Image 1 (cartoon, helix red, strand yellow):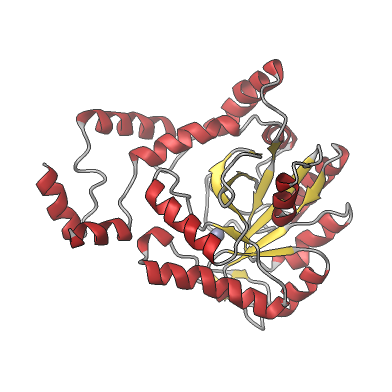
Image 2 (cartoon, rainbow, N blue to C red; image 1 turned 120 degrees about the vertical axis):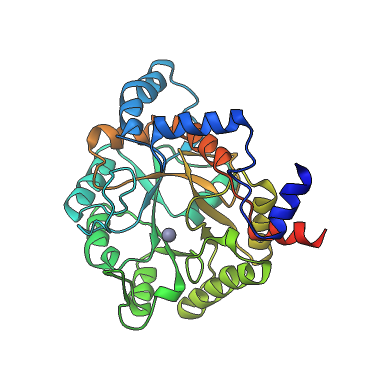
Amino acid sequence: MALEIKQRIARGESISSRTRSPFGHRMRQSLSNMMGDGFVMPRMDRLATLYLGYPMKRLFNLNDAGHIPILMYHSVSDNMFGKKHPYYQINTSPRIFARQMKWLHEANYQTLTVAQLRDAIDKGAVPPKTVVITFDDGYRDFYTDAFSAMRRYGYTATIYLATGRIQDTPARIDGADYLTWNEVAELHREGIEFGSHTVSHPDLRSLGPDEIDYELCFSKETIEDHLGAPVRSFAYPFAFPGEDRSFVRFLEDQLKSYGFESGVSTILGRAEINDTRFFLPRLPVNSWDDYALFRAKLGGGYDWLQWPQWLHKYVHHNVSLMQRSAAELK
Ligand SMILES: [Zn+2]
């Protein structure tokens, strides 16, 4: 069996599905039945959060100190990006976004950027009622639709740019406009933090070490050249491969060596002060986050999803390109 796996790796084939034990296969089947082909079926995340996760959290008041909600937004628009299921949608309509900012304000939340949160954690002084608001990819609707709703309450944010999409005039890709460098500079002067989200938004696990270097380093340098200020934070594109420990360690070393100090990922849940420096968990938010779900997420009701998410990744794990290359060298 081991020889067969090596041969398959050498041919560049995935070993994720065909070499699973019958137990792994059964577990994958039942997970898929339970959660749909992607991840979560008919809003099981919502039901379990509202009727189980959040009530339990409130009942036992479990570990609330030292937990910081980091919200993950993408586009503030009515553009559905062809995504039908509420769990996968990455847009928040401007009207609903304004309402969510108002809820934060009414609940007395104050914002920090990711770099400011890092500093506060290092000093052991994260203020209570801190929320961090992040935006991935660099959609132009932050400038046209989101920022005014935030500025009303003095809120700040961290925007992670895929720098290949940021141009001198708005780039339109798949029906969405991206920020221009002038808009990025203007927002930076208003106190918005900009971080790296790679150059071309690739699945980093499908790249070799040189290409990974380029994606991390060149995006950081490009933003720094335009802003004349250091880029301190990084957001991992796509689903974070937390189950692949050697890859995560490699990435951590690279980020450190390029001078990054903080970062976020798509791991679900609120961040904790002891979490890994570069891959803090976040709470995805979109148009479907009404008051009940939004409040439950902020209060820790969504944190339980970290475990089924991890199990799903573990079961569906594929080897990375670097692992395949290493196996070929043996
Ligand atoms: Zn992204």
